[in-house]
Image (cartoon, rainbow, N blue to C red; front, side, top):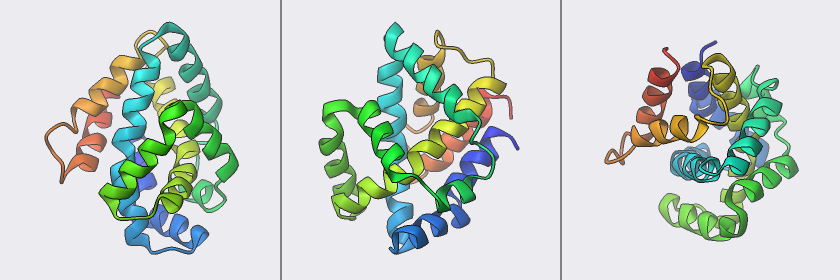
Length: 175
């Protein structure tokens, strides 16, 4: 399965349904949060990867999670919210509450649920980016560039941001 398909699985109906069922919330809320959260997650990872220490730490985290990139829907059904929360804390640092509030406003979903949804997807996002990192020959030195390219695909396309992310990932990894 290529990276575009894995990311599609993360945002597809089965994945959204798994999170909705796991958290006992409406799938429209889950979808709205994921659509609004992915650019924030990728942007924060890019910022972290812009320093040598941050790039090394993120590359290691992606590599550690890549082994779990198998069945994303199954991973989401049993998502470890504690691990996901730790990932979010590492990615956003002291800005986490501001990010959650911002996504809450954009998505119309209360901040507490935004936190749970983002914690649900964070390990799987790292897993799929880690798998893409391995298959695409991305290392700590060019990780920020990879993330920047993905984010660049979303600029100016508010309604199709998620599709642009998918397309950008496919171009980066030659899929």
